[in-house]
Length: 133
Image (tube, rainbow, N blue to C red):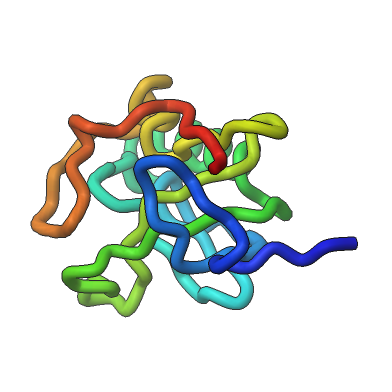
């Protein structure tokens, strides 16, 4: 078994800062992973669990990432938000040559809205699939 590290994985148009495994999904835009800790998906906003669509957003994120390896592009400007969550664009393996942008997928499938916070990311430039290089 080979272990991928941030140094060994390259994604076109992104910087892989951490490779982690998701062990808990908190809601539609936040999860816990090892060894990274709590991760907040950058520049998206899913409904809270007590709001309409909140449970559906959590279920969608759960189906995408739970118990899976994720590639985290951490915000270079702020790193963490006020709740000490890493702010990241998150990628998962799609096939042998491409990864899926989880943030973009949640937006395109109606589980979250784009919210362009002050950070290094520009959601207008995201693509759903990025090539592994």
